[in-house]
Image (cartoon, rainbow, N blue to C red; front, side):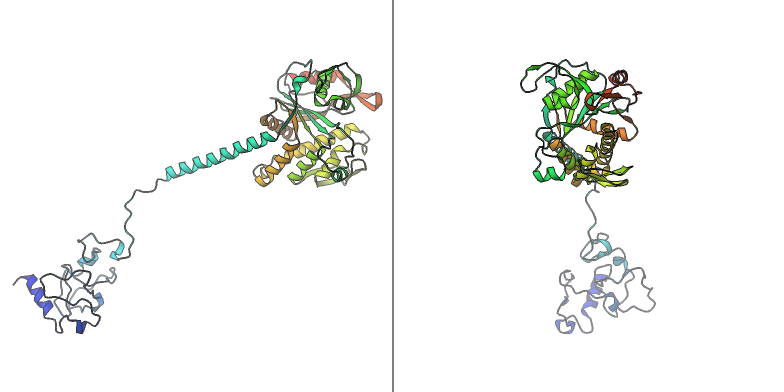
Length: 446
């Protein structure tokens, strides 16, 4: 009799047989056929239930209890039957009933084991490249959107092509920066709060020339009481020619015909070509400071001025928009009058530019956009001025405070009619020559 036949005889000679009555759970009824039942109905027996014959080698401790007991040949070992020496071989290789040897399912052979990864490994370089491209696209989109938003807010209202008899252009760029007493858009309550009064029209409250170039930046204040010649000019609105007015205070030029005549007067009296014009009014100035959250300033000496509303103690302090406007407008509290006021204006503008250009402002959209919006809404510039020109002006002002430039008053020789100030013309000519050639400025002012 063959080995397979003997095995079948043994399985049918169990003491109690394989019947539904003695199994108890109703599964695996058994059969006398030559082939074993399919895996779907065959009841498995825990290995712990199989008695070990005397003298059998011990089970490997490293192999955990297996879920279904069967030998390498695929037939269950009967209790009390002969021990098959190859009993553990199927389990040691992770074999699962019904699968070819060596091709069991997953880790440990369990039915819930995760199948092995068959796809290619993730391409992290490709993912990183796509992520980087996406970030660049978003950055460019935001930058381009911000540019067009800001550019649309610039008020290009000054036409420098109407200025006649202009000096030749020199090296570098010259900005004429003007703070006017314009009350445009201000309510009666705001005028009272900011101590601006209710005068009609507008006049220049401060004037500065900012030169930018390869040898640092130079910020030169032009006292509004400077005694100058108002030359012949063409009316900015009428186009009509007007004769020279002769000697007058510098701020009278703006009052007569606005920015175009002011540029004409500065160019005529200095010989310096003005490339761009920038103007800001009272309300815009205060709004920028408030949007920035205030400007920290060190005031060396306490002073008061009922005309501007100034009331300051000495020491470091943060000024809001109302206080900042009072600080730059104060003149009657100082013995030097207009010259001391121009020094305060330079000091404050330098602090404003320095604090506005910090990462905390530029990289914070909740601060950056309000500051930009407040400034651009109220800035009046010439028709040829772009955002890059404005940025160049701003960074140049910041550079003056950082030691990369120089700030000064226009050289003064003494007093002139009507309580005005006379320029020191030899020094002025030397200063203008250095600026035109974009040389390091050696001339000192008052």
